[in-house]
Length: 351
Image (tube, rainbow, N blue to C red; front, side, top):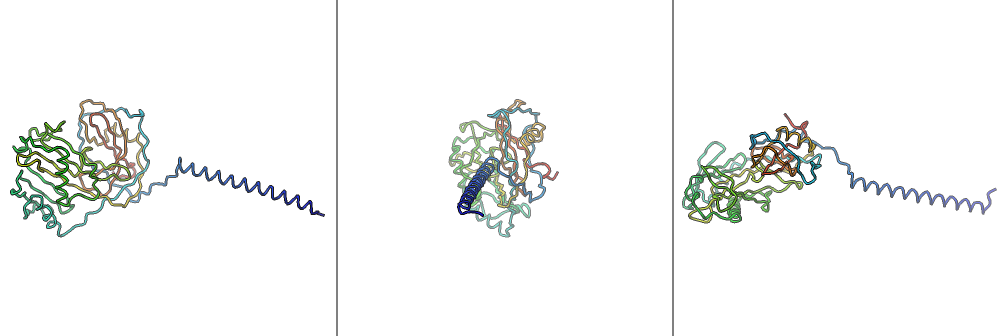
């Protein structure tokens, strides 16, 4: 028969081992929680790409700016190709909303920047206005596309004496202000433009063509480029790496400090609708570059071998209409070399 002292001893033993078991269990749970935190921090579980848009159309690149056969070597800071994301969001471009009053609205916007009222219908979708000569400066034409709200301003500035001989070309900062004022007055600066990214390029005019210039003193044209904001911490690149789809040409003038002689305005706004897609490895993209399957956007050198100094991801917007904003792998090298390789894996591209 169990005595009271025996029962007391057994109860103490049960409590002792029960306490040890609970302490061990709590310690195990704590260690598992710590292990989970470490795993999620250093080895996070990445969800599979959603690929909700299905197969995508290939990106639209222009012809390469370089015709010679190039070879490549890796000369990054680490001496090797970097590791980049293996998936990224693809965004839908906002569809254009037609407006029956688009022509009249555009006309009201341009009369304040020196264009006459009254247009010429170039086609059923493209309309043209002449500059008002009472404003002075070079004669210009502006053409507006009612399909996409894009426009151009053109002039014969490459043969104009005021432009060719003027020593009153504005500084790059002044040219940026002139370009910004023009687009502001036209209510034509989109919300997704990052004004802090504005860049200028200098050109001289030789035999009717624009030639890259190295200083303001031997330039006749300042090109002002407006860039869209970064998306997911990635820059948006265009057909030329240092230019954009919204650019304004500013020249000197015998009549005033500076004048607008050309504008190219192509804007494709990006929606918030997105889906993730798998990306090629950097080594695969590098092989495509070596095999001539990349778009070479710029190269100012003469040597056939390109030293690749930087590789990174970016989004790409063409001057042609596209349905989706898709990433590219950018290879940067010596002598202004830039090349873009489509980043989405081939099985998700219609070919």
